[in-house]
Amino acid sequence: MAFVTRFAPSPTGPLHLGHAYAALLAHDLARAQGGAFLLRIEDIDATRCRPLWEAQILEDLHWLGLSWDGEVMRQSTRQAAYDAALDQLWAQGVIYPCTCTRRDIEAALSAPQEGVIGPDGPVYPGTCRCSPAGARPHSAALRLNMAALARQTVFTETGAGLAGQIVTHAQDYIATIGDVVLARRDMGTSYHLSVVLDDAAQGITHVLRGADLFDATRIHALLQQVLGLPTPIYHHHRLIRDEAGKRLAKRDDARALSTYRSQGASPADIRRMVGL
Ligand code: GLU
Image 1 (cartoon, rainbow, N blue to C red):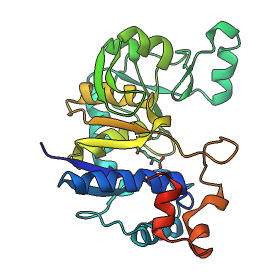
Image 2 (cartoon, rainbow, N blue to C red):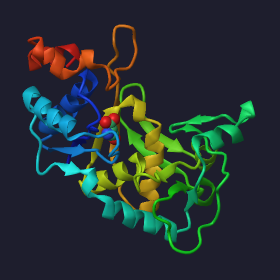
Image 3 (cartoon, rainbow, N blue to C red):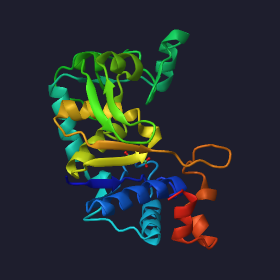
C-alpha cells in the first residue's frame, strides 16, 4: 500500500521540540515504509504568518537532517481550491453566512447548561443558521450546518491509547461539535477546510500529528465524506510537554530548536530529547 505522509507547520513562530517530534516521526515512518514525506506550509493566516518563520522552519528541518519529496505546498497559493469547495458546499445547501462576533456567541450561551465546548470552542448556538439562497457571499464567515448534514462518520486511528475505528454519530456533530466555521471572514478559508483539501490534493494516505488535533479529525472526516474525498489513516501522537507538564507553545522560545542549536545541541540530542 502506498504511504504518503506530511509535516504541515504554520509559520507563526519558531519550531520547538513538539514540532521536531512530529516531523521526525512522519519522516522516519515514510522512509521505513519506502513512502513519501511531503512538506506543507500552513500560511492561511496572513496576520500571524511571517516569511522569516518560514525560512527558519526550512533551515531547522534541514539541520535535523530531514529531506522532503517534491515541491513545498503553500496554503497561501490555494485559495482557488478552497473557493471551489465552498461553492460546492453552498450549492449543497450545507453552509450558511454568520455575522456573530465572539461576544454575541458568549451572550447567547449565557445559560450554563448550553456551554458545551467542542474542538473549536463553545458549540455555536445557531443564531445565524439558515438555508442559503442566492450567490455565495465572499468576505463573510461561513459555517457548516451540522443538522442539515445529519451524517455519521468513521476514521481509522492508530495512535497509542486512541487506536481503533473512531465513529462520530450525527447527534455528536450537532451536540458536541456544532456548526464550525469553514471560512473565516478575514481569510476566506479555515484550518479545517484547508487541511482536508490539501491532504487530498497531496495524496496523503497517513496523517501523523499531535493528539491535540484528535477531536478536530471528526470534523475532517465529515468534510471528506461531504466533499467526496478519501479519508487518510490518522495517527495522533503524544504531546511533548515541558517539565511542569504543560504543552509546548510556539511562543515558548526556550524550547525552540534554534535555541538548543545555538547552545550546541546536535540533531541526535534532539531525537533523544523527544524520545526517538
Ligand atoms: N498547521 C498545524 C500546526 O502547525 C498542523 C496541522 C496538521 O498537522 O493537521 O499546528
